[in-house]
Image (cartoon, rainbow, N blue to C red):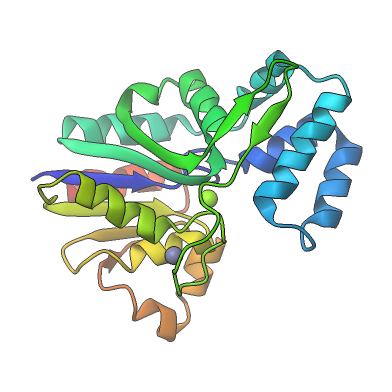
Length: 234
Ligand SMILES: [Mg+2]
Ligand SMILES: [Zn+2]
């Protein structure tokens, strides 16, 4: 069996939301501002503005990187990725976070070795040490309600097509509403793992949405539980 295992990042691979965690950890008052602006601004633009403010407050790249490395992580996620790799699965991440956060955190928890490809928003530090976060794309044609800057469904299909030969089984793990779209691209032989009591699992409580997913659906609460589900499956 040749598997492709696709992971969302925030609240899936890690136990928090990296975009919010970094602001919350470095400035409580800025985090209040972030929450206040959340409904009024496109999220990537808001995150970019927030890291701009963190820079103005004197935070250098090292401060940001050190903070990212303290984000909560369940070691069972390391075991999950190791298990998948041992079973000939290719592991990729498709996330609305950004390249810098995912790189730093994956390095901290030694899971970088398992991840073959990361699809996310591009980010970089400029010469002044200010982080810039850009949108993965400016627009797309998705009708599943994906955020303007990334459609994970389109990204997943493009990735699979770029590989040429098909996978025998797809595994998709996620918690957010933007994990719904890619899950509709999977077939009856594939597996979708929505995190229990998170927005994605709540969305598919609605029959109308649930029926759009033909893959087998298994909910998980903790990485430990996901690990045992995958042990039974592989
Ligand atoms: Mg997530
Ligand atoms: Zn989409």
